[in-house]
Length: 302
Length: 301
Figure 1 (tube, rainbow over the protein chains, first blue to last red):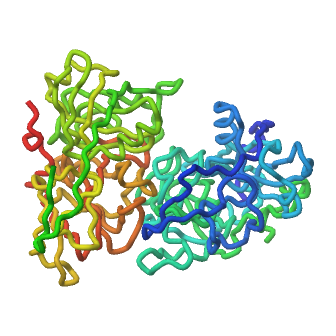
Figure 2: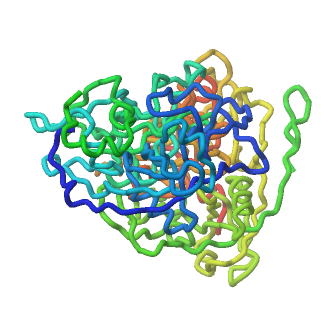
């Protein structure tokens, strides 16, 4: 968005993580909306074949995490990795056959989630070391003081369409608007960690469950109605949270594809523009090394 | 042992009672004393777990400067799996007995539960509570999961309730009330009905081991919108048969077990006891006169 920021005063920090193994327990099954047990992959490890701009739902999967799911072994260092990593940050593979491959962060889900080009992802495996160039926490908009920015790389913000309007509102393009009824697991958690699961977005379930969100794609920028994510995730009438869909299909009831939070503030501080192309893929599918020099010229160029 | 016999004469499966061991919790904080409230202000969370004195069933959930305060003692277990079992099998109305410490022998009653790592909330008489300390062992005679009264409409589920307390709550299973669909309905007297968009922490979690926090505003100056510990509350469009989640046209009724919280996404929490389609579960709100789970009902000295 074309907006004045304090980006020049943010620090960049080099963080370490590793691709985390997919986890299961010996009882295997989880329970779906109608009480049907299921066992499906998608969370942890390296999930292949799903990238930004692909449908978020419609897979035989649970808690689908596109690309690599990343943690740090030390609990304190892991929380630093989870809290300080922002959507759009560069991730470089530091060990294994994919060493040197570059991807970018698409969100948080109690893992840092990094999307890599498919050939690089195909060479990634749990245990591979990755380096995250973390920057973004502390990003602020001096002309929009009621809006809190979090989990957002300044380059990503600069590349998104929209910006400060003559009437003082911040124009943000969104691929979907989400009603408050859709907010599932993740409510009540801090908004620098994991994401907000959205219900009513699963494919193929009954009309009693649909909230009209079946069209969501990985990487979509969405607006959550009546959500205040400035200091956590809660209901507040008249507020908005803007997030990016970072996870996909869930069969566990009360869960679903979820946005990681980018912006939150009073609804009247925003001007939302419905834009089906408001997706990370639009701005970040190029390799980050190609993106950085272009960042200054990108806002509003679409 | 309850022997539920349906009008047709066939016996329902009998419930099993199990003695569980809980340990009175000590409140725990991180390295810093502060949490951040929904307006961005740091606060020190008082009353979040452990033993809370002078707070009882019938008191307002908004009455104290506290975070998730529960009336009585919260029980936990040092082994995580045992703790989840305690939270999942413990049911409202279960009897509890202190086994160690100065209050050994004192009786209490389970009035609710809390999620995440799992806690069972046990109400005691204030004199007994004052003699207890964190680390005391308390046995819970857990019974209730699997309860299915024969008259219950087939699409209605009861959970987290001791059969002995079911009969005391303002819940009518007689089936004489007509449901929206014309079939039999269960009616439940409640303080208020809350829309699902106000449901916070607890969504997406298993209803047998978690409570559901309600993001309610504090009451008005005249007390409008107040809610008491022990009240029954209905939430529309929430299906709590397994994990709790949105389902249009459903109703879930719960018992309020802990007080309000300054945290965004949190609030007074209800332990789900009844869930089903709106046509088969009919809440009857009574903002002024409602009485849910009361101190008199659980007979504490």
